[in-house]
Length: 172
Ligand code: FEO
Image (tube, rainbow, N blue to C red; front, side, top):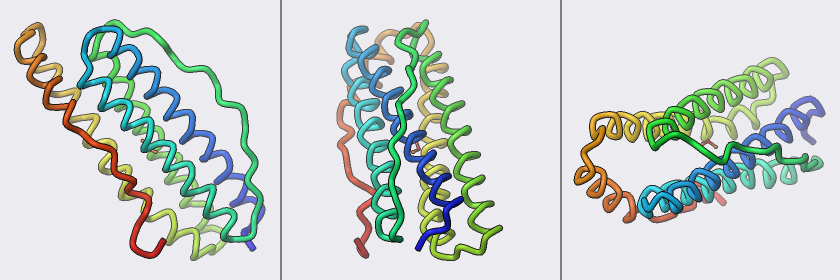
């Protein structure tokens, strides 16, 4: 049976993961409306990934005999100045998510919930990748500046990204 405090905090994180997905879906819509389908594709995949991050926690709570409590999803931004502004927000947001995962880990250590420590390790690794991806694309966009040909090429490159459910590891 999962500890009540741990359960409450994981339920809050499910909401944060779904909110992240909602934010990235909104960003994907913005890119579609600004004729950048490759960036829209990349953000749409981010949205799908966030949903799986939330669902992995959802399944975990049930596996531990707990209760999932879904909370309302708060509103997200819908307009940005440009792609750089979007990726600045993405990087800032992912850094925040990393700190939320670290807080969950602190609780798990405090209450000696070894199963949850083990479970959260996946998210610790995932956040390293999430921050690196956002940082890389922000850097590329800043380098591109007003070079529309380079932007076109990067957009084309991003259209090749496909969704892979990375939460489904061998043991699941
Ligand atoms: Fe669920 Fe983008 O981390």
